[in-house]
Each structure stands twice: as C-alpha cells, then as structure tokens.
Length: 370
Image 1 (tube, rainbow, N blue to C red):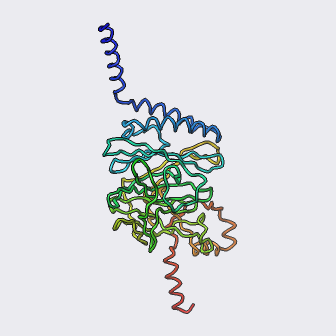
Image 2: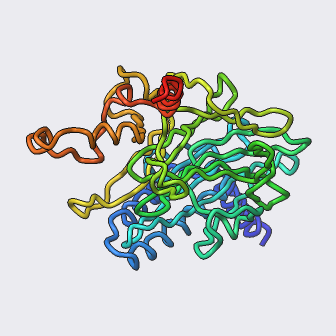
Image 3: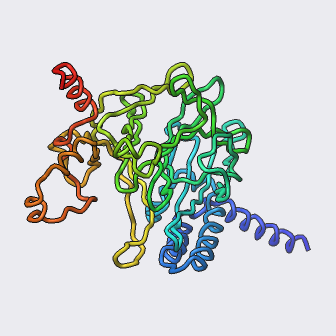
C-alpha cells in the first residue's frame, strides 16, 4: 500500500513539474498567427466579428503568461506591441476595418506590478457610441479607440503618466492624430490627465483632425525631449472650422515637458531625426481591387520645405490661397493643353509660398499704397 502511494506521489510531482515549466509562447504565437490570418481574410462584418472574437480570446489567454510580456510576436505584423521605455507597460492593439470603411479598435494593456511582482492584463473596450473627442477621464471599459505607436513616460508627483501618441482613421474625409495620457491605478487603467497646457488652457488629451488626403507628422524627439508636430491650417480661409480640409502649413509646433506639464511651443524649427522611425500598420481595403491590404502609417520626420526630401516620405503640401490664385490665373490656352492634375498628386512644397510670405507681401503692398 505504501509503495502504491509512493508511486502515485511520484506521478503527481512529475505532473506539477511539467506545469511549472515555462509557457511555450512561440507555439502560442503560431496559433495566434493562424487566427489573425483568418481575421484578415474575412470578407464581411459578420465573418470579421467572429474571427476577431476568436483571435482576441486566445490572445487574452496568452497575455496572462509572464513570458508574453517581453516576447516580440514578430509574425503578428498587423498588431501593434508597443513597449514603454521603463519596461513597465506594454500596449497591444489592432484595427478591424468594417464594410462601410469605418474602423473598430481593440486592445490590451499589460502592466507589471513591481510591489506584487505580478503581471496585470486589462482589456481596452472601445466606446463606439461615446462622445466624439471626449474631454473627461476614461476607463478601459469606455476607451476612445485608436492605434498607438509611441509611449512616453513622464512623472507627475509619485505617479508615472504614460503619454501615448496615436492615430484614428476618423471618417472617409478626415483622420485624427491624438495625444493621450494613460496611467495605472491599482489594477485599473485610466486615460486622460490634465497635463497638456495650450496657452491658458489645460487639457486632458489632444486631438488633431486633418484631411484624409495628407499625412500629419506627430512624433517624439527623444534627443530634444519634445513632441514634434505639423501645424494644421485650412486649405483656404473659407474652410476654417471644417477640419476635413485642414492640412500641414509648413510650420511646426512642439510640446515640451515643463513643470509636470506638456507645454505647447508654436513656430519651432523642425529637424530630421535619423534612425528613429516609427510605423503603425492598419488594415484597409484597396479601393481598386476591394482586397484587404496593409497600410503603414509613417511617422518618421521629414522637413517638407527641403526639396531634397526622398520621394515617398512624409511630404506635406500646404494649399495656400496665393497658390490657388496663381493656379486660377493661368490663361485658358494653357489649361486646355495641360494634362489634368490629380489633386492627390504631390508637388514640391519648396515651391509653395507659406502664410508668412503672404503676410510680408501684403505689408509691402500697404506701404506702397497699392
């Protein structure tokens, strides 16, 4: 009898030893890859919903294991795994484009609790019926959905605030770049904190809506400790307030962290930062073929006033009133012989006058009495 008990105890110990072995996260990644492929190949909203639930459920289980916190998940190329520089937070998120071209966002936050030596996982649930561009503090169950591509930890008292940069494919007419503030309170993840000072106002998060036809640069320059961005202006004065017609105007603003707040500095000089490109991948339909394709959002900094900027980079075209007048001033013969120009074609921004140039010309005309 004692021998039987001894044999049984040996089997139990062997079983516990096997359970205690490290979780095979590579095998889990292979399984997730197959489910992600099913999601990306889905052809309608119902198929996408079912495939996404299967992928999300499996991913949630994998993220509970500590081995996943540092694993690169390199094969899951259409899912973002964004790590904070202090190695305490990882944001995992992705988009699913709907049949009407709108975007749905999904995500998780992994946070390492140093005191308890535990890994906490929180699911981010997009509030699709919530207030547009909310101003209040949000929790993980009422999240403003977006794709994040950068985490910048800053200190506010004893608390670490994780400033996050993100992208939202808002409508068919406009996109949004946003800056939010995320922090962890116990096991709760919150978004929104009054750390953004714009003039005399203090805001909990910032939104920059612009035309879908252009790319707005929003990036963190670590060597200068600032968040650099294109300044947006309407394509023409009559479009003021209609943000679907806002484009970069060749000037730049920056947020500089000062006295526990990000403070806006206007009209700063932009300088390329080499070797620190950030990209976020989204899935969209090719309008010509109807097939699902990967689209990379390139946040690398390119000075659009530089005529030697490489083709295909972040070239921003500011359509100023003066450039429009010059275009309208062409004679009819030139117009009839010239090939039609697609409005999405990119021109050399160095050939466009800036709004500052226009103001100088107007002042000179007033002095001459014209």
